[in-house]
Length: 212
Image (cartoon, rainbow, N blue to C red; front, top):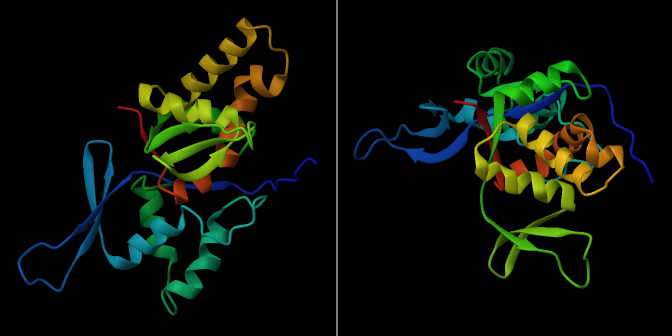
């Protein structure tokens, strides 16, 4: 059965989480560090909660486009009474969050300027579910994805842009005689990846960052 997606802009977190940082011995103040390209940002608790929520939440519906509105709704429970708008504005301005409208030139431009960082191990498929491919640790799969998303996850280790990865995979499919536009059209591959990203981001299987 096909799924219906809304036209809301997809909200994506950018950067790789680097853990907690205490500036000195015995300090009560702490920051959460996020690497974005060559820079490392020290986020206070409120800004970090919002950045983390941009990865989505465990109760996100599979068909749901995770948007700024979704994050705001989730933040009401975790940051009660906090005016999140100026914090979100700063995260967007600093490039730690980005909005992308699917199936538009804006999405292609975003993909040209960003790359997918891959984490964990590729575990392949199984005899029980040969149509699903696992990513995780030895004997501990964390997520299961389609072969297309698995291929795109693998491409993250190459350092090429999201768009270049989609173009390469589409060309490979055409070279082997494939005719399904969902596999041979790089724009459709990109849309499929962007729609599948949030569970991977939430599980820390991938991260997004600007191209150098």
